[in-house]
Length: 204
Image (cartoon, rainbow, N blue to C red; front, side, top):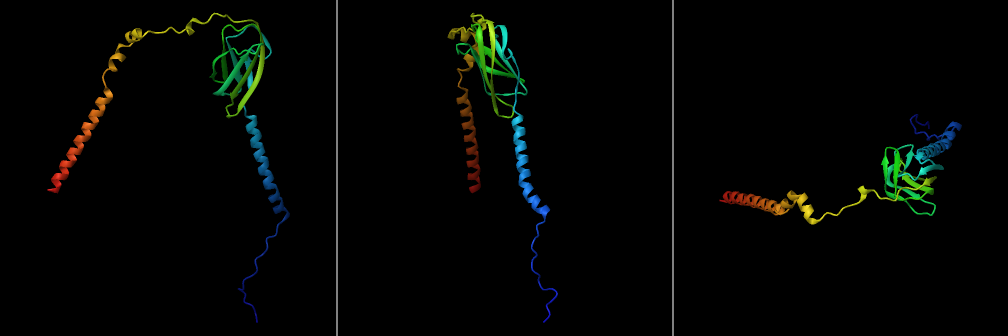
């Protein structure tokens, strides 16, 4: 008995050539190399300290009023810390770190003595990774111990406050919130009354 020409044939087995095997082996390796390259690129993208004032290891005539750190890119102001320590380990940092373009500035308290200083800094890089470092400088003389007169706060008596802002004192006497609430309630009552009349007329 002759078999029909349209009889189903057996499925052919896929033959792996040497090139196909090479592609299977090399594909995961290429993916791994690409991932490693991306990771290395992101690590190399971290900002770096490109300069400072005073410079690292420098000797200055007096303790500066502020420490300036310049970076290769604009750092984030969140979490920025700059600690200015004298030879005894006392911190002379004053106020928060100010970020202007790619420069971080830390004010130094008045009365800082002469001697060696260590600056410990830590900022968040523009790629969201924290970076930190240490630099030192020596001051031949300290800063003035006289506080800045602009920073002295003078208390204001209640009488002076009322004289400075008479309009504010007058506006606080009228209960605007209660008046607005009353207007809203009256408007709502009028709308409900009108709706009730329309329904009553329709039912008749």
